[in-house]
View 1 (spheres, rainbow, N blue to C red):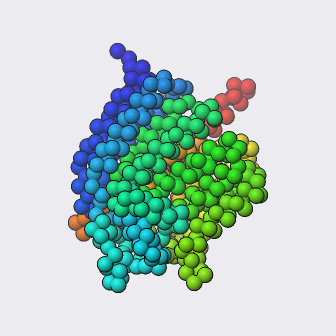
View 2: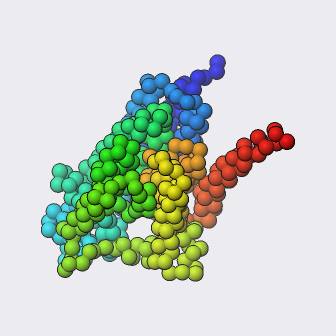
View 3: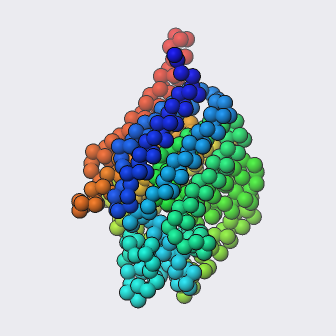
Length: 429
């Protein structure tokens, strides 16, 4: 019996559910990464689901609802796992805690013996304890707000999962207004990175993703002030979306831009140090942190890290300028491609950084980005290798696999388009 597209999607959702449940059950939080094999099984099911989305123009509403229920189930499974021994969420807990105690997270160094009494069981194993916080003020105030409600890593992970759920609501509005099928919400909700990096590890990037999705939805509705302010807040969570600035040209008014700039500056006021804007360990991050960075590593041989980091931002800006000049209509592709281009040249490309791309990747041109969110999963092997004492080095074959898959997908799309363009010419000859 031939399965209908809906039944195939149910089957793939069931495989995803089983794979992610296995992944969650095998994680014990003692410094290792998520099990790669089960994640890759789920990733294959996810890619097959993406194929179904491209092949079928629409699915019944019940399919979308059941798909979202399945996503909620595996999010709950990951919420139930223990927090990793040095997950970033422990730094978030520390930053929120010391703010409430009257200290500046951009100045206080967690490893400083003078602040040893401020630690709790949840913060003693935070990573890079010899450095102050690198996170921008929007993220800092979010940490403070959540820890004021309940001071625990679990509370932060729940808050991030709630942000993820609100992103789904914003995306459903975007899909409705852009005329795309509601089933494309599953291209976002079913991505394995959401389970591992939002509900599982808990990364603040999802809060920024929510703000950026709200900004995009507001642009579609012509709520220009809300769009500008939400965009400024997203930049205040992580600086990556700043490369999208050209896409707001003439889509928001000057007064909206001024309001957004004022909001951004006000966020820094609680953290000023002798009248100076603090950046914490951001400079150290650019100078010394490296992971999964083939393009940055190549360019760093001929230029300083600061120049190459500036180049990474410039690449994203130029892509955004190109989209803004060529297309009058607001495009999710422009958001996805601009940030992806900048990330491609960044000094650090952790799996959770790709969360920023997920809400905007749902078209053929963004298929390489969708592939990237899957091909990056084998990088978790580094965390496994670190546990027995191996150096923090990503094996070359993983880098080749990750970026080779992206490059081959992009090449296939370009070649397909050239063949399609050549076909009418041959038929007229």
